[in-house]
Image (cartoon, rainbow, N blue to C red; front, side):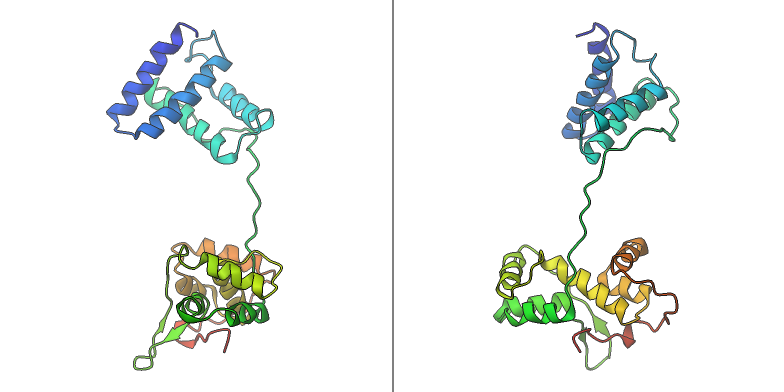
Length: 233
């Protein structure tokens, strides 16, 4: 190990602890800073700058094939090193090759497939699965409600029901939510209503689901939650 490394890593540890970062963050940051210093030894860590950080992060993505989350952790560690430990300016607009993010498109069931899966579920599990997809209405107030429940208690039952129904897709609790959103968009409900029903804090999340539905809706009336019916109706 280069003689400068223990001094730098010691300063990193001291700064992290002064800021009360978690032990896991300390270990991760020290790991990536150590790897970075080894990559550019025997130069002093003050000498490499933005271009070296960019090259190192590109190296991680292209040659080491790290996951996007790993590369992002390394970036955070190096920005911490320069800004907080060495107290040097470092631009936010670094240019490097990002690691490829996994492409996973959630399954969406047709209305017929939703009915087929739900028909295979009975008892409490069946009721809870129906609440994941359907909407409930308070008969006294006319207000619409959506229930949010833990997936863990239902995941296996839903998966088994999907297999029993012969559905050739990955079926889980979230499948009902994605399917509900898609069917509401297909029925021309506005995006704000769907956002509210699904409990999304950011409308961008709902927008993503709309794009995944494979259709573009340009003339949708804002009818509000009271106008919504379950897509099963």
